Each structure stands twice: as C-alpha cells, then as structure tokens.
Image (cartoon, rainbow, N blue to C red):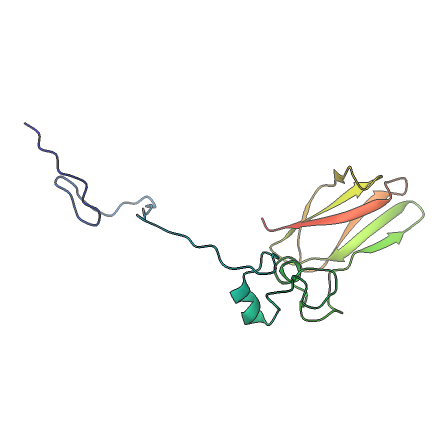
Length: 153
C-alpha cells in the first residue's frame, strides 16, 4: 500500500532528501508577481531611474538633442543632460571607399546598415564595441544612406 502526501511548499515531503550536488542547481519560486515600472515619457527608461540620474521622466529627450534619454544613457553612454553630448556618425568619402565611423563602448554590438531608398536596408557584418572609434568601409559605389544599429549582446 502506497500513501501519498499532498504537496507542501516550503517543507520537506515524505521520502524527499536534499543534498549537495556537484552540478549547478536551479531554484523555483512560487507565486512570483512582477510589476512594470512606470515610464511616463515612453523612452523605456523607468521614471525612478530618470529621477536618480537627473533626467526628466516626462520628456523622452531631456536635453532636446534628438536622442532619447534611454539611447544616450544605455546604448551610447553620452550625457542625456547636455545637448552637446550625443552619438555622432562620421562619413568620409575617399577616392575608392566611403568610411563610416563612430565611437563605440565595450559591451555593445554595432552594425552599419545601408540603403538606396530609406525603406530597404542591408546589414553589414557586425562588430563588438572596443571603447574606441569603429570604422566600417564601403565601396564608393555603395548605397547613399547609412545608419547604425546598436545592441546589447
């Protein structure tokens, strides 16, 4: 005859043993509730974080430089409180090539995309941020429009 005990969260059940294992162990959490943080301006930077860093939680671009507080704070490490501190792409046209360069930071991935019509974009191979300027080169016959995609791996 087998007797089954009911599930008893937080307690050891009959026949259950707990011991150390050489393998990494997981953890289960019962009844977890997550509450979304308020983001009044919709820039994906929570209001509380904006208050801590001094940006305006009701304006997505506190310094009015055309780049959101989230973009400056999280992706480019520029100053969201200074209109003269922003992510800038440099374009240099040489006889055989076009160079697209911009500052990078560690822990980010960068990819230049090109287009002939601003609708269809072709990605170039990505590069990891180095903390220095990254330079992407394209043949002089390359498309006319360039943009940079930044991501956190």
